[in-house]
Image (tube, rainbow, N blue to C red; front, side, top):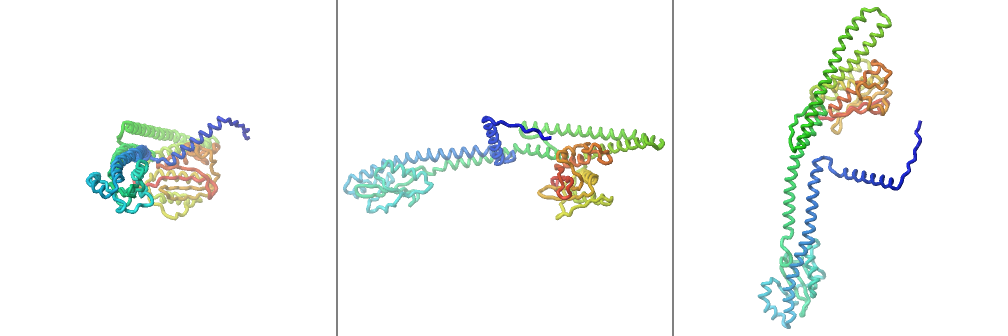
Length: 471
């Protein structure tokens, strides 16, 4: 029965709230897309961004303000000498005589004046490099402060400023060293700052790497423990990181003690209950054959099957040693054994044989055996395939059975869960097959996924494991 639809009245404030929340989620999603995924990458980003911002601000302030102001001041100072010389030249009717009288002063001031007869041709426009900020500032000051200024050339000779000025005797050319109007090596401070920043950044990278190394070790130990491996971990680094490492080690020890107690309890219960069951079977064997005896034997068989399920689940949690294993050989042996027993099961052909990887062979064999037996219990045809790509190994078991509803697939992997409660242990099992397989996949750092079989139409069980070729 469908639920009645309810009307949603959107007020303007509600619409604004939804839009703000959506915009915030979108901005966070875009930000997360561009941010590095690792903690080390983000820490480097936090370190680099302030340095870059400081360098940009320093460059803008130094070049556009301080450097340009210094250049303008030096150019203004040299203009007094130029005005004095050109004034003496304009005041005399004989320019050659004036030049002879001012020769000592011109030599001291390092300003060369060429009369119209000796002056070089004046360019049609000011000659200055595109990125010569100081040169543009020199020309700006000359045009604003010197009324007789005509043109300037800062490209013809390196380190020399050529000026053309109007005078009483015509256009004169003035040559002066550029160091008189601008500071030498203006970018020296910036170079020193950049080099110092680069050196300090490298030192910070090294320090940051040493600080993040304990975090990586802790993460590697946690990941290895998730695969059933115990990696030695020595707490190091900052106080908070050492505290996290100690907490992880305490948690790992508690989990191992709890699992050991659980295994002992399950094994003890199963072992202690087999003795009375054996006595019950002995008593029943001496009774007459009737309906009551048959019913009791059925119940005893069901109870023994449940105990076997407990033991299988307990054995599934006990990991054997890891070793380099041929993943194809494991499943090939199982398929041949079931095929010899008369079951309709095939192994799909592989385009390329997968390389040996690190596995718990005993645990993986039990997991695959449970998946195949579970498929054969509910289907008439089973196909097993193995593939390896992108560093992952996949076991796929397809069948043509009724399958499992999508909403029940997560629950089907829980221990002692049978989706068909009306079935007995002979037809439906104990509900441990998928649980053992899922636990084995997690111990290897992988997953067990149940989905629809695209080929046979039933259920597909996909066990995905990381393909590690060395310990």
